[in-house]
Amino acid sequence: MTGAHGSRRDMLQGLLALSSVAALGGCGNEGSRQVLPANVQFPIGSERYINSYTEREEQIVRLLSDILIPDTDGPGAIAAGVPDRIKRVLIEWMDPRSRRDWVDQLNVLTADLERRLSGDLLSAEHGDIVVAVADLDQRAYGEGGKAASAYRAFKREVVAAYYTSEVGCTEELRWLAVPGDWKSCVPFSDIGRTWAV
Image (cartoon, rainbow, N blue to C red; front, side, top):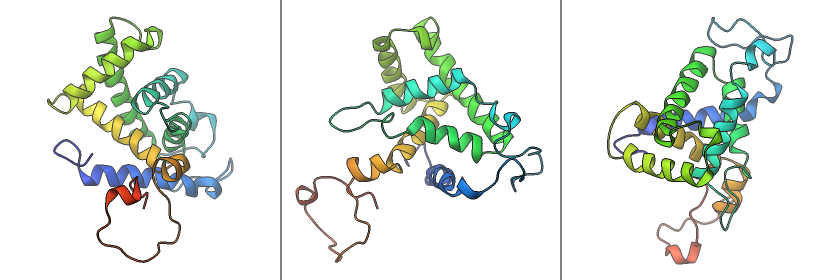
């Protein structure tokens, strides 16, 4: 995720956005205004604030998240609440311009997949979508272009949302709330899975 096509800064910004959502519970209601850029003119939670993320976009995020991290021997992206976490970042954390840019990238990604599927993404056969996403994944890390960039950004956000969720931290990774003694070199077979923190 932090190789030639994705910077450490991009990853950290994504993680910051996701972690910020946890602090939003007490950050505003219908009567309070969000302290963000001046172009935010309406309260958190108002219809005008929310309705820039459509049901179709939400369905596409859910579909692609499930394809990228499906249920296997452990819970996948849906069980971990990845689509809901992404929605909360969009609705409650991003300013309108950032949200518009994010949705524009999602539309670029969707258009590329629909071109490959020769039809509507949400109406296509699931197996065909999986093949199209796998093909895009291979291309995205071997070539440039808008679709490749949009896919890499989307995949980073899905992975970040998954591994910062309770499921990702406690079931996919190992979780130790209070670290014990420091061991600088431990055989991976003794641990079995990478630590969450």
